[in-house]
Amino acid sequence: MKKRLVKDSRVVKTSIVLPPDTNQHGTLFGGKLMTYIDDVAALSATRHARAPVVTASTDSVDFLHPIKPSDSVCVESFVISTGTTSMEVFVKVISEGLYTGERKIAATAFLTFVALDENKKPVPVPGVVPETDEEKKLHERAAQRSQMRKMRREESRRLAEFLTTRKPWE
Image (cartoon, rainbow, N blue to C red; front, side, top):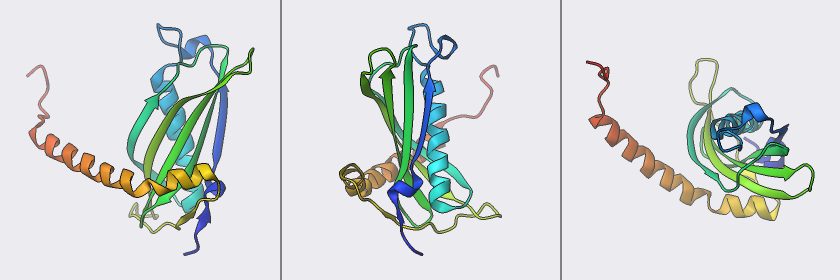
């Protein structure tokens, strides 16, 4: 399977932040931003795999700066590394003060997606080729993030063994 360039999976979504999108602090709801993040990341993974995908994990969403009304929010994603059937997608969120032009990295996130066939079984995905310094830097640490992801998933499985599914009112 031929490798694909990182830039071929790049997706960019820009939105204005309006008052209904904000919380009691007057900043963009974190959940609203997480919806944007999952949306663009899924598009990047689908572009790369050219197959249906499912979110396997959201490793982290790090909120670095608040996003306010009168800002625009630009959510950019691309596949940064691949496994056999999985893809790691990096997302960066850039806020822009529309009246000042000031731009900040407001958040970053790493998500993992798995490509599926028509029977919802995992299918192989092409490798990825980073070109820019940013892409190369993110790509070179992918194995380390993968190892951390595996350890975290195992810990989550162990934790799930102790959790109850009973109804809280019983």
